[in-house]
Image (tube, rainbow, N blue to C red; front, side, top):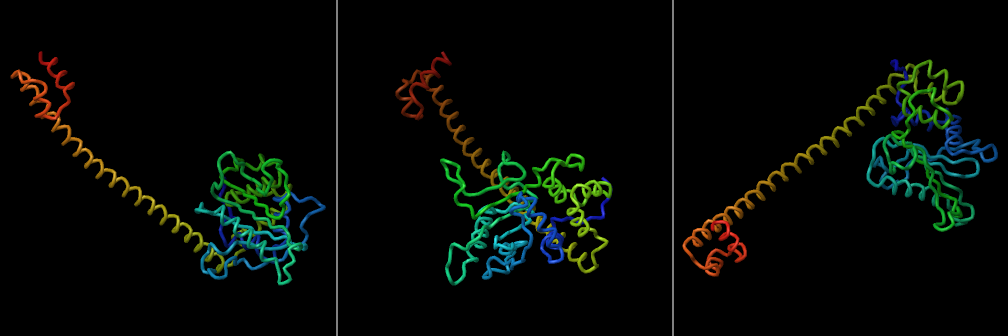
Length: 310
């Protein structure tokens, strides 16, 4: 594909610029309606951004801050995260943050009846779930026997970009697929591709406009590049740690193998020496009982040696 002028929407800064700003509320509303499949009767028409800090006591930890948190006009909460790399316990963290967004609705009146739904949406640049799960999956609480959906207030949507196989605009058949193409291939999108996408989904064209590097000021571009380099550095550090751990494992394995080899060799040498002694005693017509007593070899093995030298 031709060199693109578009930045990567998976970068923290570009993602929040598109989906986490008042200026682009309309893009976020369309994205949520498209991904959640809301029809005209339950469509989101307005949203309000909320604090993205989920754990104030550890707010310095990036893992305690979600990318976008908002609510609609009836109070439903939406937690949206861009997941760049697989981290241990992500599924548990997703459930924890959905539960926090749910419980925070409760005011001093303690009126549980007023609690509204929470939707947790993760766009992931890595596989989170087993291969048999499709690239976009929806999870909620259901009865084990009837599959009835009676506990309706928590819903999770995972979009796993590596599983999205379509890489040409002509292959895209739905708005959801066009969103996935946007997240996965925005940097490689050509102007011709964009025209085709805009004809089917004008709102995604607006998202592309926000990624146009020529519309970013120098300060924001520098911050974008610094964040990109920071991610690369972090990935390189973890890769080096993995290499170091692997090499250490190899060295420890080699050392253990040498020790085992030495021990095994010593034991084998001692046994061969006993066999030589036993053969010499057999040639001198010493009884099997006495040979077994002096060498420690089993009588059956000594009898077999006698047959070999007979």
